[in-house]
Amino acid sequence: MKSFTIAAILGFTSTALAACSREGSVEITFYGFPDNDPPSADTAYNCGGRNYVASEGDGSYDNPVTMASAQGEFNSCETIYVPYLKKYVRYEDYCQKCTSDYNSGILHIDIWTGSSTTSGGDEQVNCEDSLTPSGDVVIIRNPDQNYAVDTAPLYHQGTSNPCRTNHVYPDEKAHTYCS
Image (tube, rainbow, N blue to C red):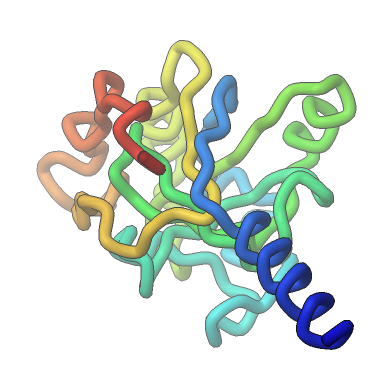
């Protein structure tokens, strides 16, 4: 009986910890090949067979975009959902600015844009700045796997419209998630 009770409590605890939740007041910025340190697509963690290489993915749960943040803010390889982008992102990299913000009580994520093999240079960095929201946003931790996804890349070098600012959703109602 004791074993069953302990197993039931442990099962309830892990389920409760894994419940979908909204996290508000998160600063979002963007980075890519030209402003990674050093300039490359190298990441801190090997998640999902990417072999330490950042990816813009298509933003689906099974192919999330690489995200950087402070150590301790997320679990390595944790996948979250960002309603502002309608994309899933995964914690695969480290961000120095995110760390200094985290130490000051500010949650901050930096989201990968563009190619993992070539730099978009100043055009890409300017795009990252254009994609950055003016205020904090809400993220979804332990998200359902079936939220709406915009699979368009945020930055696509060599196209007539490389910076996809029309693929952000500042008015997305985050309160509708995890209900």
